[in-house]
Image 1 (cartoon, rainbow, N blue to C red):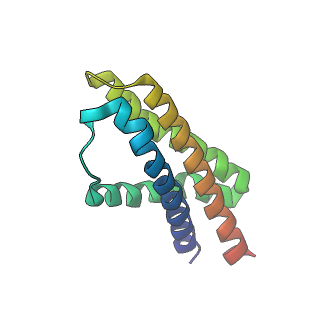
Image 2: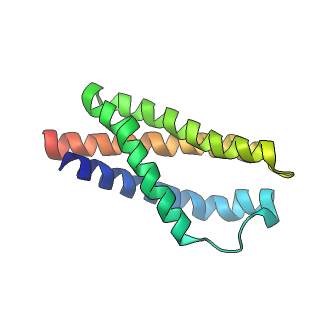
Length: 133
């Protein structure tokens, strides 16, 4: 039961954070900087696959250790995981695409670290309160 609560808490919190972020960043950051590289509209299926795997990674690499060592470990591990995953995407794009903004990479990596840290901390806290008491 604790892993279901961890997964749901991480998914809901990360999903809400990322939805807010993308609603702002799409038209204000990504579209102006990346223009025609972006699809004209959001594609739900690949996004859902990403979120399903990413949240599982959050639970395994951040929330699980946070339950063993304390919620601050979930937050730290979440920040490291988020920075690593988002850096993989952004810096690979920067290395391989003709046009990719360094400022978009920096902002996006910081966002990935912050959102993953917060969602991991929320998930660890939820499990501690709801399951571990």
